[in-house]
Length: 139
Image (tube, rainbow, N blue to C red; front, side):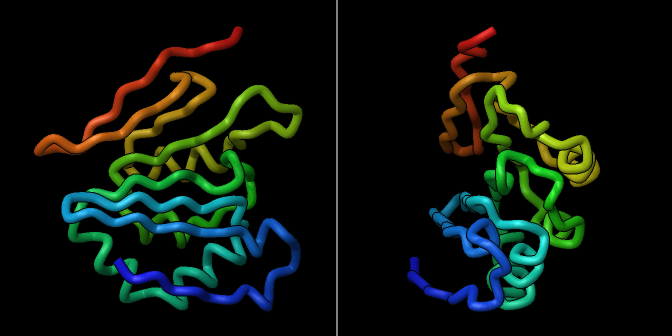
């Protein structure tokens, strides 16, 4: 794996300058999008087309940006081809995950995993990418 640093000098706010992390193994990759909004997602895709093309060669898990806020890019999620889209979200007053974000996830064909519905989620690979969950922890 090669560490690359890119600057978000065009970022309009701190969410748009979120840390994005791609972890790769020989069998699958995991993409963590922080709180990156639509503009940041599209900038990330445009600057890394070759990386995203290579991600299509193995299973991909994507942690959906900003708890599934409405500020998501249809173009970005369409280009990902994720096996799993993980919504890390709990009880909140912001309406996360937003219906529009869930709609993007459903349209992608990825399996949707939500911590507010499943509890803790663990991923592993044993000849196939799999997940386990703890069950919802709170009412």
